[in-house]
Image (cartoon, rainbow, N blue to C red; front, side):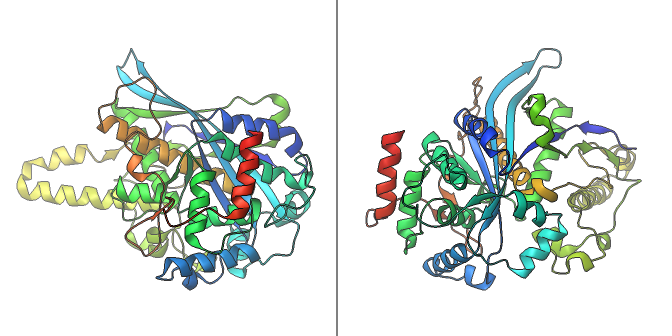
Amino acid sequence: MAAILQPCKVAVVIVDKWNIHQLFPSIVHAIQSSTFVALDLELSGLGNRQDLGASSLDDRYKALSQVAASRAIIALGISCFHGLQVYNDENTNTEYTTVMTQTFNLMTLCNEAYTVDPESLQFLVHHGFNFNRQYSSGIPFYRGDDKAGDKNEKSDNYLRQLILELMKSKKPIIVHNGLADLVFLYQNLYLQLPLKLDTFVADLTEMFDGGIYDTKYIARIKGDESTTYLQYIFRKLQRENAQNCINGNRHILIKQCDYPKPLRSTIDHVDCSVYSFDLDINAIKPSDVCQPFAARGFCPSGTQCNKSHNIDDVLRLEEQIMINKRSKKRKIEVDSDKANDNSKIQICNQTDQNLTLHRSGIHRAGFDAYMTGFIFAYYSLKSNYQNGDQSELVSPILGLNDCRNRMHLNRKMIPLQIVKSQFAKGSTSHQKKWKNIATDG
């Protein structure tokens, strides 16, 4: 059996309507004390994907607004990253950065009629989403504007209050390909969406004063990655981090919050440990891996596909091809290098063929938020290191300032900039609500 190179079990706290009252103060404290907060949403659907890819950004926003008004958030993932404190191991002279994480998966239930797209339903069921539990235990909420006479302590107002706490914290908000998430967050848990995109953008600049960072955009710009879906980037960087640890290079050490015993029954642990394996023994053929999944993280055949949808198989195949190319090049240059190449076949940052990165079930949104935060933390670490920063406390945005408030746009080379235009004002409803938030805060 393959050896564990870097053990990692992510604790995801499952929050529902039965324990939200007990856990709400802890979630708020986690946000307020964090360095940055990563978000991910599970949605009941996205409608016509062709409309969401319209060439006009105004048309895209109009289509997204209509979708957000008819569909709903079914789970909200929040992962709070604390610290980024730099340490040095005196025994190995290895520099590492510790990060403590707190991850929550909030099961939500819109108490108004909403549309569930068949393809989204099939996808979620296939990945183990428990709709029975969502309908029986989801935290209730309503969409659009605040209702007259609302009080924060009402059970169907916890999620709205949580968004307000997130705004008041002024922490950097991290998303992955997150424009749709932000549109849904606004429509479902804040206010009725503005009619125009530039008004929505103006509102966002005030709502999230700490900045918004899109890790899909960061992976493309900072990592020069052509494949940028969440699971791929996370696993690739996680394995790179494990290799850095083994080689004595600067790396991230993730620590989980030590939760009290009464809370442990609500925690789901996700195993995403990194394993070693011998490429020479466990070689994989290109024909074994689903190419649509490898390229986009999605296979149109779904459960009918008989090829591998394991992200570790995808990455192992890439490494295998890279090694074969290097080996052939060295053989052509110096035939005597063959023995030396063979001695390097053992690659220690790979993962076991049988390991599956579990993102299914009730913890999916929470774990996706964790993956998003890890990607941001790792690129932040790389940017600090490349910029020669040796401070004890690593800035979460040092080297990533050029990625602040830039959202990835599918089929577009340039990002959407979350910057208030001198010709656009915030919406009237937001300005009124924002004034009350500032007064209360």
